Amino acid sequence: MHRAIPGILLALSLALVASISNASPSASQPVASEANAAKPQQYLYVLRLVARLHDDSAWTDADNAAVSQHFQRLQAATAAGQVILAGRTTESGDKTMGLVIFEAANEDEARRFMESDPCVIAGVMTATLHPYAVALQRAPRN
Image 1 (cartoon, rainbow, N blue to C red):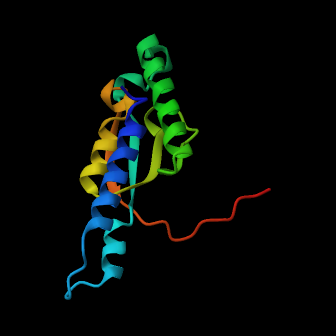
Image 2 (cartoon, rainbow, N blue to C red):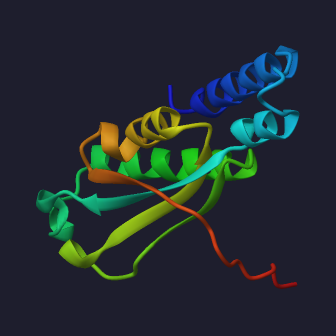
C-alpha cells in the first residue's frame, strides 16, 4: 500500500492541475490567482518515537520493518519532488525526533500524507502537522 501512495498523490495532483487549466477565469478573478491556487503549499510534520521504544531493546522486527518502509516511502516521495527535506536527530530515546518538510495541495492532502506514513500506521511514531514555509535554503554542494 505504501508504495502506491506517491503514484496516487501524483494522479491527484495531475487531476487538480487539469481541472484548474480547464476552468475559465472569471472577470473578477485574474488568471494569476488561479496559478497561485494551484501552487503546492509547504508543510512540516514532526515524528516522535512512542514511549515503549525509548528503550532500544524494546524494538521488534515489525517496528524495524515499519521504519524501513517509512524510509523507502520518503525516498520515493523525495525522488518524485514532493519531499523537500527529511531527517532525524541523532539523539536516542525520548530525545529523538524526525521531521519531514514537504509539499501538498492543501492541509487535508498534507494530513493524509502524514497519517499514511508507515511508522504512524504501525504505531512506532506519533506525528504532528504544521504549515511551513522554507525561507532560506543553501544551494547544493558539489
